[in-house]
Length: 474
Image (cartoon, rainbow, N blue to C red; front, side, top):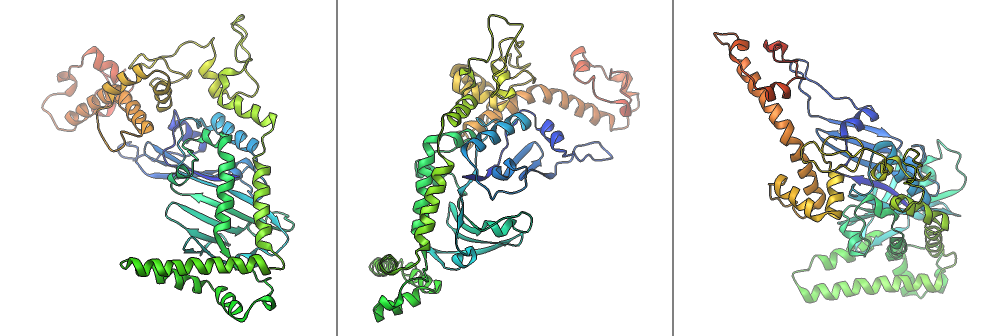
């Protein structure tokens, strides 16, 4: 089912807390104590986290994460996807409602009764693209690289046979979406992590996977050559070589300036594809191509079969406010949590928790901890209180960029500016003091520098001893 994902701008309430949890340390300049902005990476059970300044990103296999980072050659069901998203929310504060998916892989692992490597050697073309071979960690991937997606085949059993006891042959077939517009154009509008649990998309994804496989030309060596005419035999032997198809493709793509010639040569190419498939349909003996088609279809249906239990898991995760065991309003001293509800989500709805407000705007926070409005909370108000959101946007969102249509980016900048409205005032004061202290003066700085009570309060946690300002630093 789903496997690799990528989130370019990871949205968590406290990235520093995530750094510490993952064991990623900050680099500090030994002379000035300044935090150095550098790229840091770490890995957790098959997921790779990258930190750069105030930004963080995530990429990797949620299937492998489900298996504690050991492998992803087994089956990955809907219930497993729910459990992974729930775990990421609880353990790492990765909210599925606010984290946008930028890349996504979906496909199937199928057990086949033949040698996978030999089957992959018979791959030819897909929609005018011939496959390329990519080597990675002693593995060979056969890929058709398109502008917004990649079609991939590889030997999954071979990938893990040296570390796990795997019997038989396992082939992986998947589509890697590198631009989400590809799925959107197919009617699958996956934008955020929570959309991976929208079951209405599953049949469309399965059909897309199946149609993609059926578009690929694959040579079948089991065709009964004795049943072919001399002309058919000559053509089929020539068509075994991918170079034959490359030459046909280059013949019509090279004459785009001549519409008539381009149309004629493209029609000839399409006629040859039809002839190739017709021979396989009528004269094959051992139809491995059709067998793989059936196995892909069966496996996808198996992985995405909905049961009452799975429905309950998804509904409780996506709609926690509907859980009857959320709170006991009659006895506020004894609040019971729903057993399947994540603590992070629970904190947003529990009735006996003191109301927390943003120290700058006074807006109620939907989480128990925190000082300022976060990106996820602004997304919540965008969806539930348009008037409040617009007032915050008018006050704290000044810049007009190409990202104005991206509501997540707008929320990020609003949250950023809200924090800065307090921290910039304090930091700017410190910088001014440091600049004054760095220049030799006739009089002691402590005798000439006068701070207001508000200014003294704003820098009371700053160690200014090295500048002779310890009198002002409490």
